Image (cartoon, rainbow, N blue to C red; front, side):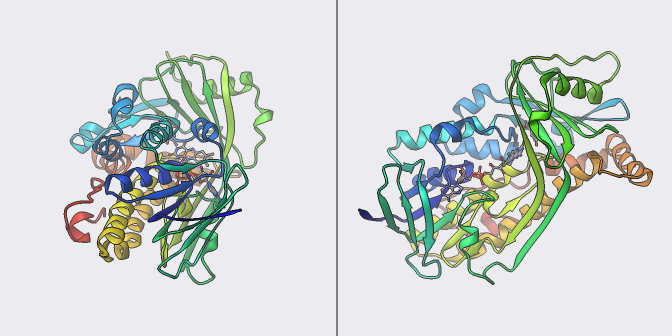
Length: 414
Ligand code: FAD
Ligand code: DHB
């Protein structure tokens, strides 16, 4: 049997982008249906990002999602950068005149959003299959899917939001020629990430360049560490025993007088590293947001923050479009987001290139990396450039009420 339905915004994907979009639209009085291929449990447990820009934190607070974030998030002033066996602190709060960063896992943001949507009685369907989007260049695009019980739903929408990540179906539903830019860079290495029942051995995150490869020491709570190692592209996580992981981490992070606390590895996985930008982030009545439109390598922690920034702009634009019939913000959405996307793409490419060892890397490349790192830790100007981009850009404005034009609502992030 097929059920015919109607909503204002059909949302594909219940990752951070899709869930936050549904939440913001509801604040502006707009209905949505959000469909997700995976189970709720899977979405809530999927280990990914953890570092939030202060601008992301401020937005989440402003829209009623600050409760657990403020109680459990770990606020940091800056980061450590390590190379040549020495660790240096960069104080972003001081360098930026007050901006900071917060460790609060993507899993927790997703749990908070699902709880808020569920409490509001929202249309949020997990474990759907055969999702399709059609009629994208008409005024009534259609989202179709089969629910967990096998029933087919055909939902007529005003707009569809593609929030279904890099491997989703929405970007690929755009006809040939509908995307004018597909820029991509694959990196010849990957990250092995672990979650460990080991108290963090550092008060703030450490980014470490070592001749054996990059390492990152982050954390989730005062009891749980989150650590990463550069490994070959396509590495099999099964080749890394707990002992091997801890020994490699201890070697790369070694500095005199410091030791790494070990503990049981709770989860491990390998993440490929890629930069990708598709543009424009819109085709007719389909709007792309988050990883569906762009991917960055994780160094610099921009992926989740970009998804939040896209959605703050998109929600405001879609509220104006569907409630007021005002197209100005919807028309400005892609150009506005792409400015930030490219700035974050540059930051993550730059941090990745400066800190990782490329297979076959020669001394010339190594010396260039070390020269940049020495400059970063010795020049206030160089450190301030990183601090400014790392902690966020212009504030994220979600504003369903005032009628500011695009240029004033979303000032340039350049
Ligand atoms: P996603 O989180 O990918 O959500 C998309 C959702 O759409 C998924 O739940 C998916 O199941 C669903 N979906 C896909 N296809 C369909 C369909 N056909 N029908 C219905 N639903 C569908 N960023 C960092 O800053 N730091 C990190 O350490 C980090 N680690 C990462 C590790 C991995 C393995 C990955 C993949 C990403 C990582 N990122 C990291 C990036 C960050 O997690 C993403 O930028 C963020 O998840 C983007 O959110 P999103 O909602 O756009 O996409
Ligand atoms: C984390 C991930 C990152 O990619 C990063 O640059 C910093 C922190 C994290 O998972 O905590």
